[in-house]
Length: 368
Image (cartoon, rainbow, N blue to C red; front, side, top):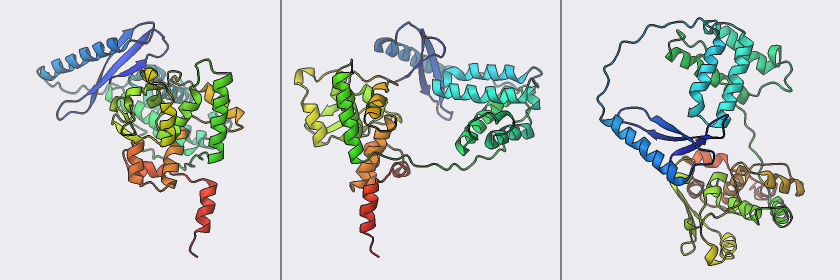
């Protein structure tokens, strides 16, 4: 499946993007902008994807262009802010909306600190000074609520390095002054998981929300149950179809095009979830599994969490719960890795959390 992405700052343009590679070459991308007031249909997306792949085949058979001598480095003499704007325009169709917003904030803050100067004046000393002030909450960062964490520092560092590397590749800068800035080691606190009592409170609050406040029908409680029972990501649940489910084999098959890593997986269906699925009449077992669930729409979930007296969390927290409870139930980590669709076992073990109840049970089983 191609990547369909809304173009920034406009509601009438969508981008269809594909990734391709030739033997001996790095992976490249090709995209086309669709001008439509509504989300394009699957037929239009498929037609556009076919046109893009046809263009790839044409390029595959084209004769290679004669190599040219590399141009001499021409230092950019205008303000560095002009290059920042050019870089943002260049990167906009290549990245997600959230990543673009993050990149925009970082580079605008850096350009404001550097002032109206040439890109050649972005020296290593000045960049280190900018990053140090963010870490210590002095200078330009004195009005911040709190100093940067190691993760925030690393985010600023990588965006600055990539921008300056682009300037070097475009011949605007002789060398990248920030390439030697070392990444900080991040200290991550594992997010807590919900215990059984909290899960029951969340499900009860979701049930109440479906009965009294939901205009989409009873979808919220079932969505939470599905996330807890299968570990599916919210995007996978939105795309979930009744055709994915096999009651004979007691499994749900998630196709590759619906997953984050583009690798399909098979997840067993628990008896409780299967009973809930069988409550739906056969004549209605077609189309979307959860028609009411929409992308980035978690207002109902947050209202249910408030009613349950629990802090806000995203849909991904239930995926953490699924992996953690599978491991605590004694399921082989390799099998849990397969259920969750992780590339490595190390990723699965990072998801492993334990509740206070399991900690107490473990303490009672200590041998000495």
